[in-house]
Image 1 (cartoon, one colour):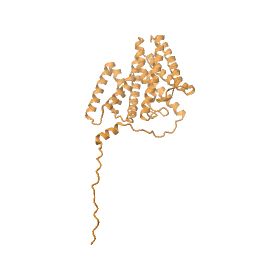
Image 2: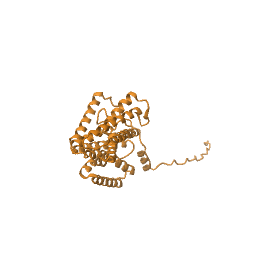
Image 3: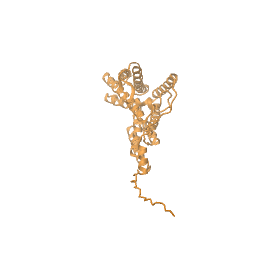
Image 4: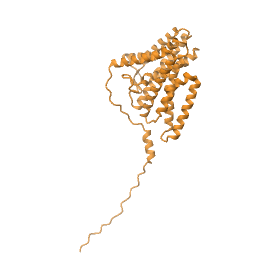
Length: 311
């Protein structure tokens, strides 16, 4: 009987085990890394729809500002809440986990808190808001300290900034307080419109191509000129007591920060892969798209008016 030849079986070399990341660390790293966000294709909006949307938004905002200081507060509270909601939605796409509910409510309450309690009311709201966020951070294990910071910043960026228009509305009694507030809002709209018109027709030198490729220095200076004109017209308001030098300072500074506010929002959208902050305003994106410059101009205008001795 033949035997099979003996074959020596040498032990195979064992490869070193590949170290694996702990599951928790891998999940946390996946949450922190921003994922590319691709917006669904949207059909083009006609010019007629854009005009209707812009007209409706402008007329509604103007009417609420002119009617009374109470309606101005209501308008700013609504805008603050809507802008905050869109802001948090954008940051969600950037791997942040803000608490939209707490942040949106706080943003909407800033104009209300100033109306009822002045600066003490806003300080009280900020304190309660911060404590609530810390409680949420302690008892919600998925929350990070960056999420707390984003939630706090979103309410301050929208609600606190827009509260400045409630403050400006109370500088003069009656309709003239509304005219002053509307004039500052109009300077923002004129800045945006003139910068867009001149930049589209004559823009050759890019201002911030990596953030907002459509912005040009030609449009920038045209927007500044429009802001100067509107601020000069504020001198006609009875009882305001604004001097020519301060009107020029207001036009220059507010015109510049208005464009800065636009660039800030543009960078947020670019970082999160969005073209618009929302879709509630057909042809114009979201409310944050319409109010990005107003957020910083209102607060800056209060500083200029206080320095001029008006506030």
